[in-house]
Length: 117
Length: 116
Image (tube, rainbow over all chains, first blue to last red; front, side, top):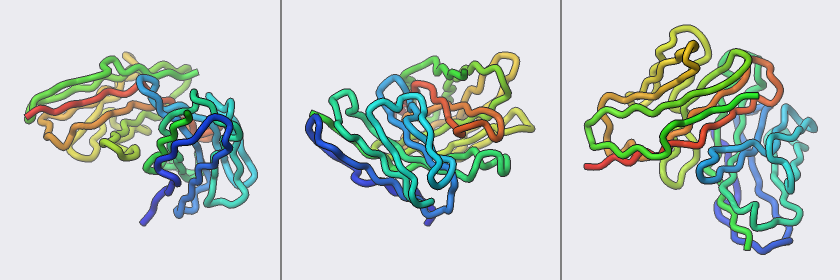
């Protein structure tokens, strides 16, 4: 089954304790992205990657890092989490934009709910 | 820069009644438009999309939306809702092909609560 898998689904941590949220897709997609969802704000893009070793900032990158060493994986790293990073996080992937008209359709993971105390 | 406004944060509706969720966007370039649905404790699922062609777009679960370029709107409709349509709905816009990032800009979401 074609899917985007995120882990963990739920995590409670404390301020300053480094954590990584993993994201893996099995669709051979070039494009991957991370979003955070906050009430009333919809989803906002954190980082994205157009291919292996190619990453760039989205709208709200502060406090986050990413890496893209393999095509299927795109982990989100919080080096020193703070309470304002408490949120619901989504990973998404798609074919490379512009390859055909449907390439802009993102497939989303089930989400990772993070609480930072 | 693009922005999306969903005019209603919550929409209560009775079962079998029609529902319309309003979405307006702003962009200086041509756009692709999407509606996603998020059921409780789940990820986002694509409901429908407008890429080009006919301005009336039909999606899954009986939903449809109409792209109105002059009013920069993409309202979502369903003629008769079911209890199972209780969810949060997100309107989103992305830029033209090959735009850097394939970024979706989302509206704030509309919670639909279907009452029996």
